[in-house]
Structure formats: C-alpha cells, structure tokens
Image (cartoon, rainbow, N blue to C red; front, side):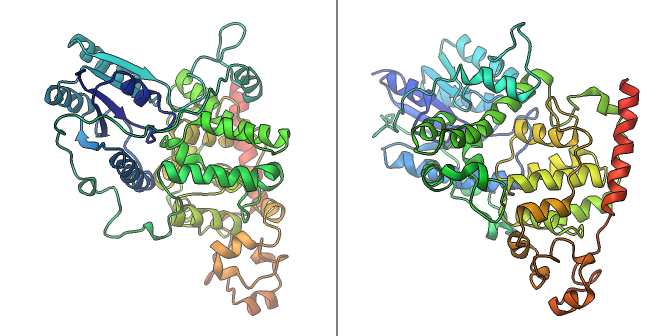
Length: 475
C-alpha cells in the first residue's frame, strides 16, 4: 500500500477544484487532511471577524470530509513543527498544499518544503487561490504593471479556467487516524461578549456555491446598474468565500461565462476579480502594502493624530449618515457594501486626514473578507498612495454620494434608525433639515444623533492643501 499523503489545507477550504487534494488522491494511498492554526510569529494574526468565519468554515469542511469517510486533523502551533510531527506519526511519503502569497509565507513555506525534501518526502505546491500566479503578468519589458486596466487586459489573455473538478465521492483513510484538537478549544468564536449575533454569511463550500448560483441567476444580468446601490443585493457577496478558498476563482470565472447575462455585465463583474489579481501582484512586487506606502512620496504626508476622530469613525458617530451607516453595518455584520467602503475610507483619509493604516487595521479586524492584498491595496487606492490610486483631488462628498446611491435613504434607515423618521430630502444631511422636520422625526442633533464632526467644504480644502505639500516635494 502506498504511503499516506498529507494535504495541508490553508486558504483552500473546499473539496472541489482543489489541486492539492487531487494530487494526493492520484498517489493512490491514504489521504490525511490537515489544518494548522498557524502561530508562526512572522505571519499576521487573523482579525476577529475572520476568526469567526474560519470557525464555521472549518466545521463545514470537517463535516464534508466525514461524509466521505475522512477526517480533518486540527492542530495549533508552528506549522513547521506540526507537519514534521505528523509526518513522523503517520509515515507519510508526500505533502501537498496550495500556496499562500501574503508576506512571510513564501520564505517560511520554502523552508518547510526544503526540510521535507531533505527527509526524502515528495512535496507538491499549487496555486489554488488565484487565476494566475503573482508575477506572471508582466509588461513588454518584463516589468510590473502599476495601472489596473493594462494589467487586466494582459491578464485576461492568460486565464485558463479549465474544466470543473468535482469533489471526490470518498477519500481513502489511513489504518489509524492521528490525533486531532477540538475546534471548540481554539476559541475562534467570540465569547465574553459574543458579538457575532448579526454576522452575515454561510461559511463553507456549500454556502459559497449557493451564493454564486444566486448571484449569477439574479444579480449578474444587471450588475453594472445595481452594484453601487447599497440597499439592494447587487454584488456577489463572494469575497469571504474567495478569501478562505471555499470556492475557486476559476469556478467563478466559468460560472460567469456560462451565464446568460450580457457580455458587458459579465466583463464588469470579472474585472472585480481582476482587481483581486492586480492587488496580489502589487503586494508581491512592492512589498507589504498594509504597512508601507506604495508611492514613497506619501511617507511625508502630513497625517493628523486624532484618536477621538478615529473612534467616532469606528463607532459610526461622525454625523454623516452614509458614513455612519457603513461603519455600523460593518461592526454588526462583518461586511460593508463596496461603494460605502470607498465613501468611509475617503472620509477617514481625506475629511479627517487620518493615516490610511488605521483604517486598514480596523477593516482587518472587522471584515470577514479581510485580505492583506485587497485590503491594503484598496485603502491605498482611496488614500492616493497606491500603485493605481484615485486622483488626489478625488474627495468624495458624503452627502452627494448618499443622495446618488441611496436616494430614498433606505440603507441609512436600516443602519441609522434614529434618523428613520426623516424624509428622503433631509436624511442625507439632517443638520440642514428644517427644525420642524427634525422635531417631527424625533431627531435632536448633538443628543439623539451627532452633529457633523467636520465641515465638508473645510475638510476638502484642508485635504487638497495637504496633498499639495507632497506634490511640491515630489516635484
């Protein structure tokens, strides 16, 4: 009988379209599925919302494996030591895994692979998380694309989605199962207090497929028109499923192209998958985008230290309804609509002139789809310090954004209920509403709802002056 193969699950918590699992099954011997709650110091710890999602996703994967005569072995600690110990315990002859591309992984994983090969084991590593390997899409001179549109035009030509590879009906089991820790002992689900009552999503591979099918059938045909309206289900909602690998980007690519949605709508949606690829390339060529400015000119940017302003933003108490609605949605559900993410990020970095890293850190802890490449890249896009950044003079007017994308105030009423009595004309800027309208709605500025913490016109002028300082230094 062939020696067992260990499949090291990471951000590929699925059984279908999983190259590492397929490779293990081809060996013909027993397959041992392992997940390590990795405590390697060089890796960034997970935030609270992603720990919540991971807890449910691992439970789903474990249940899926049990229906196929297998198990998910759970161990917590240093991945290098755990894999070494499991190889010794099981007599495994090969280890397979899908790569992670965040800072710290490549070097550490390389050390693990070299150690295993030195012991005579086979090692096979795949890309199960992205359409293309980072660094594969290069300019004609071999450089890195710093602008999204030409990057994506070049990338599309290289994408090979392949054919669907369904989950195996069964997995060969070893003669004896190695020991496993209990998922409940890891404390991934919050306690004291349990703040997760409003969290949204169905973690796991089945939840991912259900979400994809619903999106393709209902929202994709009108994606371009609906995706910016936060009160409507116009976006895919697939980002946490993608982050944890409960679905592969190739499966999404195939589903979109197989749909009856208009070609321009499919292209618009898939360009969002393209931004995920683009951000990964920037992360792997420009360094840690969660801590360092991609554009070094921003190292001299005059950010303000404003702990009270940051706290008000985090709590959804800025006095700008669309901003507060987004921040409260995030805190309650672990998600935030993409259009609103841009609005709240612009408000923090441009209205308050607070360093984008504070926003990135808050999102890292509160988003279920928190991803180093996308989170850091998107924050720098808004702040203006990224590779393909929004123009420095693009400062979202939160009132105008609210009027445009939430014209009836439906989204605001859901998340800022103290303003629910105001009409569509008044809810976007309650301080400008007639006193009688506020009184009838029970809105008392400074009491039931805060006054705006900063004047928009003043903040815009201040931000433009701050951006001009680094432009002059650059020139």
